[in-house]
Image 1 (cartoon, one colour):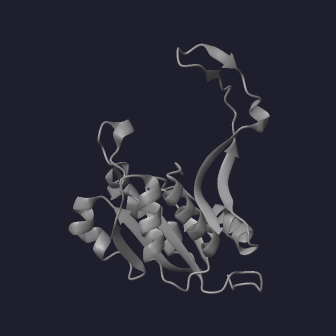
Image 2 (spheres, helix red, strand yellow; image 1 turned 180 degrees about the vertical axis):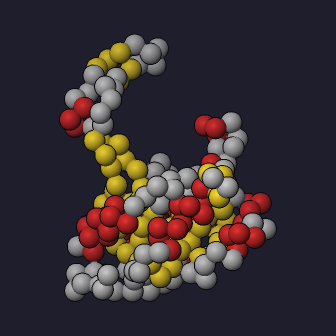
Image 3 (cartoon, rainbow, N blue to C red; image 1 turned 90 degrees about the vertical axis):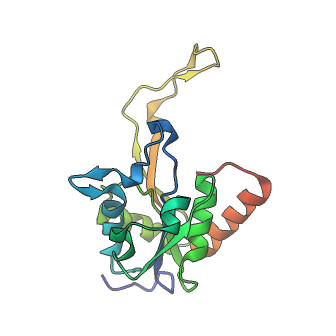
Length: 192
């Protein structure tokens, strides 16, 4: 797809946090689990590597994998830069952002364990970011949700029409995303 006049100069970069310790999965690192014989991380990268606008990809890895990356990852694509991730997702994304080609104008942030993103979703996110705003892939909630207190007592039932389930990718003009992450780190704000 040829770039339009609205698209940010310098191409698109993709920051992939893959340094998670898998605490919610009992220490299993989701990004390295295999699906049909292939690591989730490889499957998650593929739609971006196939996208004609993507010029740079940075993957933030756990310390061990960053020091000695798996062979399949080292030779996957020359646009990929591997970096050591941080203690939190915020720090890993920031490390990946710093490793992207400096000429990238728009950044997509995509979770390493989300292998089913489509080209259409990527393009919709890019269209918003090309216009100077941020975008996040999200789907309306179909579940009934409950807000509870510390003891597990139901406080309210939010209107599901107003609830969306955020996923990735998230797309932003690079300069705005860098500033947001700088501010979050300086102020100690949690960010996902």
